[in-house]
Amino acid sequence: MNADPARLELQEVHGPSALGGGSRRFFDLLWLISLNEFKKTFFGTFLGYLWSLVRPLLLFAVLLVVFTRIVKLGNSIEFYPVLLLFNVVLFGFFQEATGVAVGSVLAQEGIVRKTQFPRLVIPLSSVLIGLFTLGLNLIVVFIFILAFGVDPTWTWLLFPVILLLLLVLTCGVSLLLSALNVRFRDVAIIWTVLATVLMYATPIIYPLEIIGPSFLRDVLLANPLTLIFEQARHWMIEPGAPSAIAAAGGWLHILPATTIYVVVCVLGAWVFRREAPRIAELL
Image 1 (cartoon, rainbow, N blue to C red):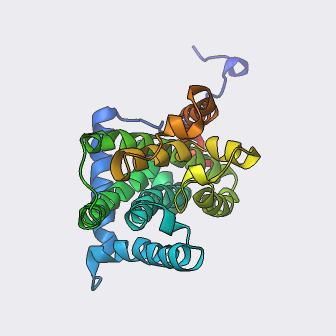
Image 2 (tube, helix red, strand yellow):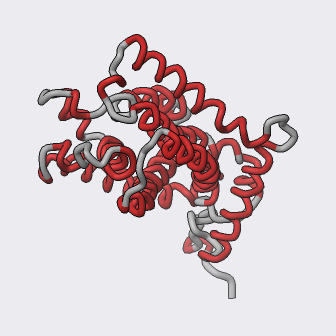
């Protein structure tokens, strides 16, 4: 018996979801893709991995000369050279990972159109590659820290907390940017500018305490990276420096940055999950 054509309805067919195929397949793919891409980055180069150190070290050298010889800001801050290097490497991870992730889905257009796999692997592999580089860079950073006479303290054991907070924020921003960039191709260009603004809106080359009570200080405190970097300085470089809460002036003053942190991470995951099945159609 034939069905009535009038009653036949077309069903919408969705593409693979963000975690399509199960969690085990997702993590296996994430590890393999990230490891292969990390190896390919330096394969055949003369200096190999050392190239990943060149950019942060050059930036560190320029900023160190400017802020100790010209502006003379660093002369009043204990262990300023290693603090600057430490901050540059940490922010470099955030900037590089998000900068690559924003265009990662578009860069894999051919694979996305033809292959069914968890879409979440694409932006997160960019973050994981950045994490590999950060881990190697931190070995050099800690050698500098010890060489400059910074004494290890028990708070060094809390450094994984700093890394976790920075990693989660980086993942949230990467997911949000990579999903939006599929629909709006200007996002990558806009983020390049915003990442530069964020660098100067984060206490990387200056400590937060030199900014007196003002609207500018309130704006800086609304930046989640400000709290992460201030706490990293307190735990890792200068225990006598104010903690993030003390630098902000109390628990209430960290609420805006904390709220933005949570909103960005949740929004990034929600937007990418919503857009994942439609990515192939939009490319």
